[in-house]
Image (cartoon, rainbow, N blue to C red; front, side, top):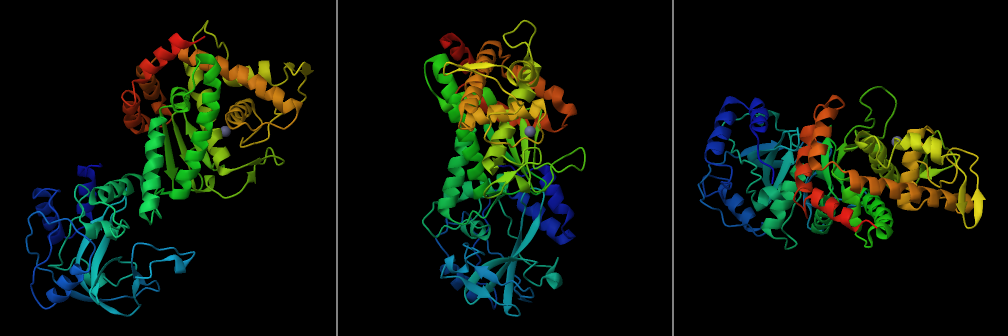
Length: 490
Ligand SMILES: [Zn+2]
């Protein structure tokens, strides 16, 4: 569960008036775990407020209810968009929404009985508590005319506490307890929404699926993050999981004959973990120039995907217009880059692998003759035999990367050359895996390597810290897993 940091509080405080700041500090002093209280009768609007709360879904008992004195303010909806009551909102198919949904129409009057500040990563959004027709709905300044209310004295501040959000505040951010989800589960969802900026997670089923994917990814040694207002949708999560799971299967199949057993999760973790996958809100994630990059891989440890990395169907690259790639293929390509970005830095003189992957590809693979099915196959082109191309060029770094991704995903051409490439790449990756298991410098080596790569991204060590820690604990220390694999090597 994320903690509210001093920086976040500072950022909040910067936006507040003096009165609000005082109120916030009082709330913080009272402890972030204090639940916003249930209002007692206090004035003209209290009756309606109490009634509306009775219609609310199950709430946890308020710990120590104090009686807030809501200053009820009449506001007017001024936007084209209606404020909708109901957490399900499917803009593509409005008929899919809850039938219970009621709408505050433009121009309609409502009472404003409080506000909170919901701080998703880097954005601090003020939301207002609106009441009408025995309904409690939370709206933003975009949909509600709150200019006249901004900083108004006495308007109740309901702190959004991640540690202990109430049912009402959970509902505000789209986590409804209506379908029988437990409060603990809902709080977990709130923490995930905070940490990962999950968007369009509009049902308990979707939340459960997102949680399941995130937990499985962690077992692979993968942690998700966000930058530049990036948001993970359930579709993005599914695509990333699809690519990781298939890469794990392909890697697990290579482990089987080498170690005498198959464990796809272990295989992925050993070869590609620790890995940070970050969703950027940008189209172009190229930090150096203006060339359009859908994705980038920093030093073989962090992969950043921008908006364009996620798409339906297939696309082609400029360098290989005849070959297609899907969104999941692109993700698998970026994962495959780990082999040729991270491992060359581990190659020691005299070890089994004497060349960097890209150089090995150029000298020993690209145009090498290969024996398969009793025939000698001669390759006439550098990138012959591959059925998928997510490579940004046909240079050696990019081609070896696609070759590794094609091996993981079994995407070779359906002919003798494709089968020869597959056999050739299988031989190569077995060498890489053997090298990895024999020569691995340990998690400490990775920590040192990441520290050195600070020049590429100053934030890399901080970003990698959490997943590096996971690699030493769950399910076992990576060094122990590698040691055991070393003893099983046939
Ligand atoms: Zn690439």
